[in-house]
Length: 193
Image 1 (cartoon, one colour):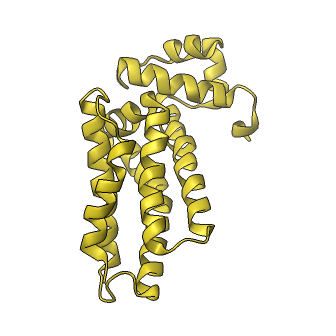
Image 2: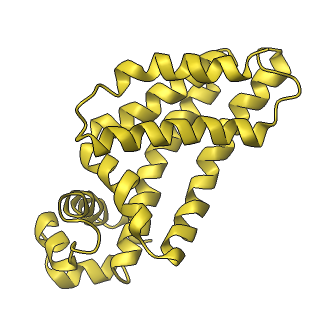
């Protein structure tokens, strides 16, 4: 499996930097190879083309969001606490790797329809984990019994996604983590019983 090969992660991390600094369309495979410290041909041992690199970047980095959220879901917290921790975790992943924020919030959205479709498929797992928080909150009585889970999830993810995009567009000049409690309060007020 290509993910187990030694240079795979090196190329993924290099791709995040090159795409963030140059834009997806200007991010030549040769620049990614140079950033990764590998020969151009080495890239093609791991990836079919530049689109495959972009999809793999999203898949690998989305795994970080999902792994953190999985730990939150399995912890002994109320659904409301899990919601706050999810928002904080989402913002923390972005602030820990500012290049990643540029790639996820701007560059992925400029890719072709086929790439965006594959990215949406990868994102579904994360969204289903948000649904788990909401269902748990409904079952415990913390959240509205008649809440439309799909709509609530769209509002929650849409809000944190848009705030992160705003943070990227403003050159990451405001403290994304510091506003997490305010975002949480606004969202919680819309779903609590």
